[in-house]
Image 1 (cartoon, one colour):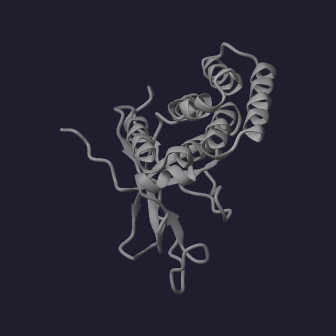
Image 2: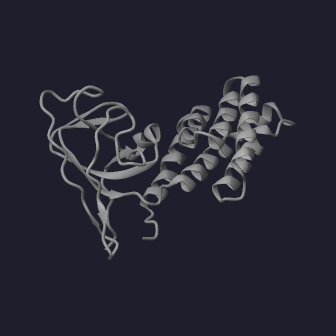
Length: 218
């Protein structure tokens, strides 16, 4: 039987700590030999009124996850009490049930490249002879596959930044996305979505769904 994903996610740093505000250390789930997961412990209940950005544990839906990407993504089981906000929710307690092991440095960078490449036409329509953003994406893809040195990646990123600074409007946003794919890859999706709005963001959500549903090899 196909396992249904939970509805909420938590993004943590490489050490399993909060990375978008706060310094909480989380009880991490463990993967069993048969591929199933043993959830982490329930986090201590917070006291007082739940208040986004002030009191409680923040969790996000898949659609909101695009705004909070980072090094590690986990599925979350929230407690009964939850307060919703536009781009996140806050809960009194929760536990991590599974790490989305399909998301790692390589897939995060390739996802950023996909997002940036889809809106690159906005830049190239205004600047057809400027290949700096496209070169940044191509270099980021090769770097993700271990086929480019970090110095080459940095140079391509710097060139894409320069192209963005010389552009305007949607073309600028597309060039920023290309530079982001070569640098802070997790944020390139947000820049790309800003360039093409709702339809592009929906594509990104569905592509992200494919990634987080994949189980990497044990």
